[in-house]
Image (cartoon, rainbow, N blue to C red; front, side, top):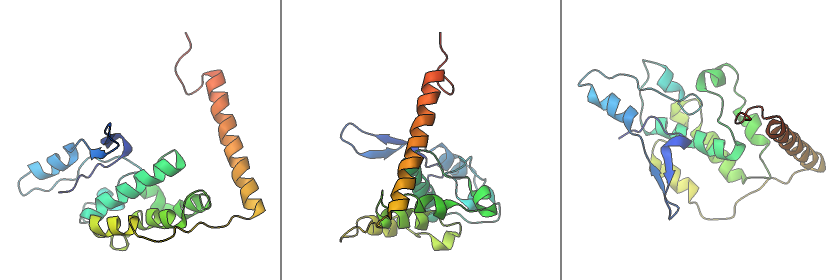
Length: 177
């Protein structure tokens, strides 16, 4: 069974820290039409490119794209660009390269693998993804140069300043009373 709407909002964390998938509405809608396969609703940023096309087939690799997008969102703090934007100009590798030294190279490579725009280049089964995620051995981290470390610190300072300004001005947050 395919979920077809995996996103952070549909992953529930239990009190004992287990992740549980919720909201199988998209899967139910696709399966409810006898013989007439319809495209499910999707969430931009988490939907694989094939969900935007009528002539493409979907499979576990479709949900695996969304799993990669969820990991990306956890790493970056915001969702990736949606698939049509990525097909025009893909900046995923650039965005992930900025996270080297913060996250293991292995995790970054898994996210790139899961979010490949070509469905055949992604893991073809959840088992293949699980195997890679649980791989034994030392995790590799890219050694950052002094300049890269300074750039990372600068980017973090800019982000923190923007968040502080939003909080101070109330812009983007709850309305002041």
